[in-house]
Length: 152
Image (cartoon, rainbow, N blue to C red; front, side, top):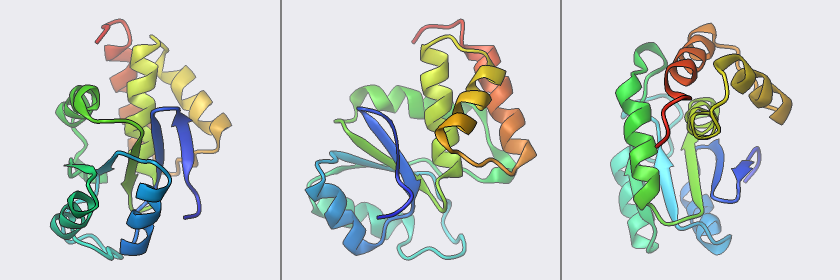
């Protein structure tokens, strides 16, 4: 699969995997898949339910947290961060292109490391994340600024 980005030893983000890609993820040693796509999005080779069946059929854990760019909520990030503790590692997290998945991964890491929202966005840019969505940048900045002093 192309355009995967390793956040740390426990998490990699990228675009939605195809059925063949899911098999490759298993072969690469991933233990869980997190899907941030909502049902019915464009260019979706597998629905979230179909993907969950395929992932579990490969013996991997599956978590679906549907996130729309138009309706991102703090509770979704909190749930993702809570679920990370129980999911086996390493994890492959995805959405359509990797932007939402990357943002959620960065919000988790930044909050754990008590970074500022602005520092988080700068680090994401240095890592190669392209964020052309002002609403996503603002959401990341606000979430991290509100949660970075809180240790999980």
